Image 1 (spheres, rainbow, N blue to C red):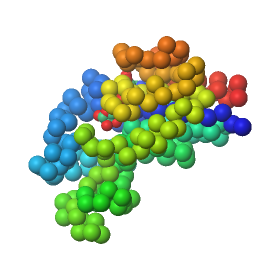
Image 2: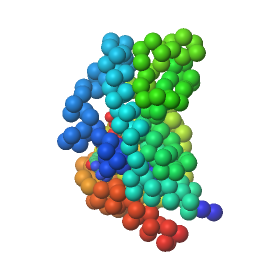
Image 3: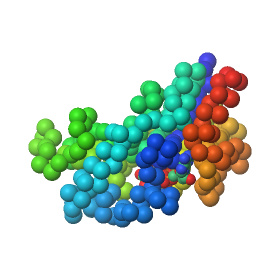
Image 4: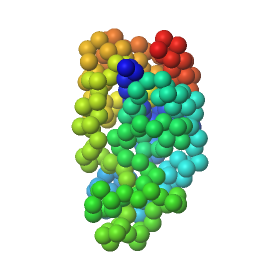
Length: 230
Ligand code: APR
């Protein structure tokens, strides 16, 4: 039976692919107020500003290439039962070849009905414009979980965590709940690794192995170790 490895990823794994993180010095939340671009209230108040914010990010995502960290995780999937639970809305895990990916906060390459969240449409172009409607006639919005909205996949993610034989955390400040609570759901004694050049100052499992490296360096090294000791 293949060991099950759950990899939790955040914006840091995509930083070296040129996509901004949120809370680093040059992060997205330095340039924008969350309240203006990433809440249902912002959408109600000024949907054009919200569309433009995500249209800009989507253009960057469409041009971005997976880096060595994404590619190493795709390789890991060939050797173990892996599940990537990502907070990222980019598609770099999929571009790298990972097949089993759960997007807790949505996917920017999809638009979604603003009336029925189950109606998703894979975008064939970089932008969503006002006036573009879903099949029910409501305005299309980014398929992204905004602050204050439910995280539909979180219960499935919580169900998966205790089944992990190994947990790896890459590039998340663990600043946002409920994703940040997943780490605590690993069975006691489960080996946990964190890869981040600046290990977040939050309470981490006491047995955690800290790899203070950028993702493109730390992830391939850990992956090759795990495959060697398979
Ligand atoms: N390699 C690995 N980690 C990195 C790198 C890198 N090259 N560069 C930065 N990091 C780390 C930072 O040290 C930090 O711990 O990535 C983390 C980025 O943290 P955030 O910017 O807070 O991103 P994230 O944790 O994914 O944010 C969670 O917050 O704004 C919401 O919905 C948004 O999904 C996002 C959520």
